[in-house]
Image (cartoon, rainbow, N blue to C red):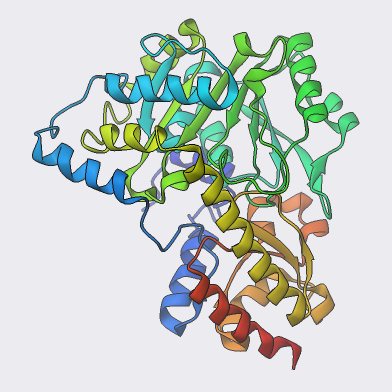
Length: 398
């Protein structure tokens, strides 16, 4: 039976709609299943395999014991909204009203969905960088908006200023920036961010920033767009607890924006999940108040893991692009004789007992040629796991 509906728009936007109109599984599901069936080390999917800080976990247990198990307020518990406001002031000097300018969501993905659905109409253009996180395309498609992309090319994975100027026009409603960037690990410099603000101002567009890796930078500073001159009034800043505190399964995210924008997004968000994660919200508030040493420590630890895996990939024969932050490193399989990363990733469990994902999974079909041999590997794993992965990848060099 053929089932019609707007799911097709979402699937098409996420590049999952086959030529026959059927839904294909994501490359992440395919590669994770391959890792399970083959016993390979899964460096394809970006989730940590270690628990977060004890203080945060204990705070969640205590919240359950204390009875925080029913619906929280629609915009989030005051304790978490206050903590988010304090976090923005502490790290970035941003003054955010916790009662009017903060919205707690079911992870960053719901924040993105509610924002795009609330602030676009059919025919509006949403500009993103490419490669892009597949949820961006799915949500833009579901909203009926038009997805416009600006390429980030190897080896630096930075957008060209002229291509940004060409993509952002009077038709642009939202400019969606993922910074630090998944899947490339690049961090946008101040000059690029300032240009984006200038273009958004010129064309009266809003800026949406996905900053879930904000504390996981080690080669460049993270600069929130909202801190730049002229940006605060038109910027929706999105982040979450999952990456910072190794609690991806808790799905606690948030956004901050001027009150009028937050109110518009709430009008949609309240009919998505409504609310979520009551006992986890006070726990994340505890996390956001941890000392600076925690935040610098997690970045330094991730930087060491990046170096460990990157060194192993280089020794195995890949050409590796150094990441500046996030969970992922990009490696080119072409020097190993593989010019098709999809075929290579399907073969890699048998070749070396490791799983990665092709960068082409984050790129539209017509734009994939220059990314064809690139593979994304996740280094957000225990060092012992990465050491074993490096040892296995050594088989490729023999």
